[in-house]
Image (tube, rainbow, N blue to C red):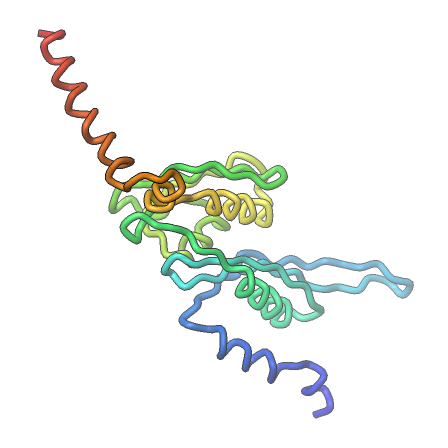
Length: 197
């Protein structure tokens, strides 16, 4: 009975209730680490957790504790405090291809057509599933350490921009940015047709 107040479990539960508006969390990896002390080795557990609302918000966090549930709880709390918003195209994919790196971790994220699904490795798949992206192609080109892969993925996601934000930054209309590409495409095909004939 004396251990309950020291554990702080009641406060953590209240905090989850306040900040948990339909957030889902995924445990990416858990690792047993050892600290060498005078009497031998003291073991602890390090957890990496990804949290998201499947509507464009996602965050990650790492936690370390002597017990697995406590490490996961710490990581989840940190992930909830460090959430970012990612603009999505049609609520299912990225607006554009993007490259991200963190340390030795290098990732490439590509937007995909409807029905493609999530083509990505384990740590990156957890990020996309909690984020709510349904169609994306991702490739890890560097370190396969889950921490580096997740941080590189977040570095790439923070570079994502929607046409609306780019247009407002450049002082243009969204139709100016997107319409220009559509206008040039048919003109190029009509010019090429007589040349081949």
